[in-house]
Image (cartoon, rainbow, N blue to C red):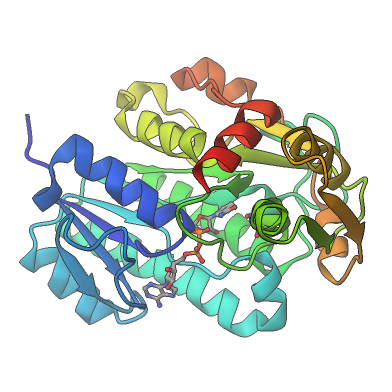
Length: 312
Ligand code: NAD
Ligand code: SER
């Protein structure tokens, strides 16, 4: 078997920390190089190699890939939906250029596998709200969604034209306790747990009836690793796979938390993120991922709430 050497870009972020630790368990600490623009996350310290790197600096990225004998890249650096609306030019430039830099270097250096996540944010107001299918009308209204949709087609292009094995998942909103979320519209579903434990109350920036597709981080990590380890013939979608875990509203997650913390209360003060949430589907049809590479989630709202409260 080929010896893998993996580079994780954006390793200090919400997904990066947990994915890096999971990959280190599988491939060995020394074979997973974590990198980020910001300092190394505390949870990564001492667990394996770390390089400080700006993915926008293509030369530096190229040098690292050669110097470290990298065979696989996981590109997680991005600006998420809510932060992206505050600085659309920066979001477009980082989200697109980082991907093009990685794809170009991968093609030149024969990197044999690349992972790049897309998002439910590719969907827009004209996409079906319930059980949104793999292939449907896609007209995103956020700069983040536009960058993810364009990115999906660049992945597909590099696969079709140069045979690059790029794989991708459209993550729903991710909920986790190890590292903080980075500026998305679904971040409320993480904040609510911290505030419930510390303050026993939470003011939510989305309306109580805003249903969104969500997933617990252990499921997202499992999906990512299963997708990347699936035999190549099973990967038939080269844009990005829909996957689904659960769907709930702020009112529903608050009620679930109240089962564990009866004095918890929630109020609602919707802001600019409401419009972003309104443009996304409420639930996702992931039957294609289930059929192609056997995706299945482990956690529902009740399991996740229990686990979050136990671990925070
Ligand atoms: P995050 O913001 O928590 O982490 C991104 C990391 O990238 C940060 O540590 C940041 O410092 C780093 N970074 C930013 N600019 C960089 C640069 N120029 N060079 C190197 N590193 C840089 O984001 P996340 O939630 O971990 O998301 C990771 C990926 O997953 C993104 O592509 C995101 O769009 C996607 N995604 C996330 C979610 C979610 O709910 N978290 C949902 C759908 C898709
Ligand atoms: N959780 C992400 C966001 O809200 C979805 O990609 O931006």
